[in-house]
Length: 166
Image (cartoon, rainbow, N blue to C red; front, side, top):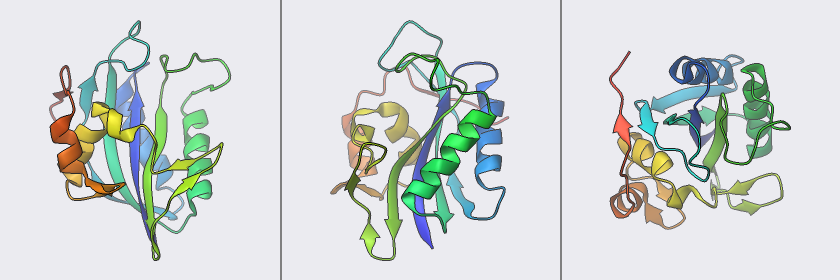
């Protein structure tokens, strides 16, 4: 069994409901099990500011899937929830985005740099919308050689608001 950190976000439709549904679909076949889930956070758009705010969360999951199999499942869930990667602009509005932030198996942290998947996620340490929710549920997790709590303490988290439970 491996574990992975996932970052989920969206800003079209009903993002909070969509993200909850995404987690349900990821775990539906039993190959992924939710271990921890952050609260939902309202976050300013990143990369392309001309769009609505996002809702973001992080999750730690246990999985029997390889990193690429987990990525394939994430893409299947995104498509099922209305995401069309071929029609959207980079960093633009979307119903749902699911990224693998890190992946750890029995041998330790998986490091890879392939065109379809880089682990740990190469921009996670630059993104408050990842670090703030992740620090809530896995503050001692390492991304590279730095604890999430330390990365989150160094980043500008302006505009990020923890949303009340539904």
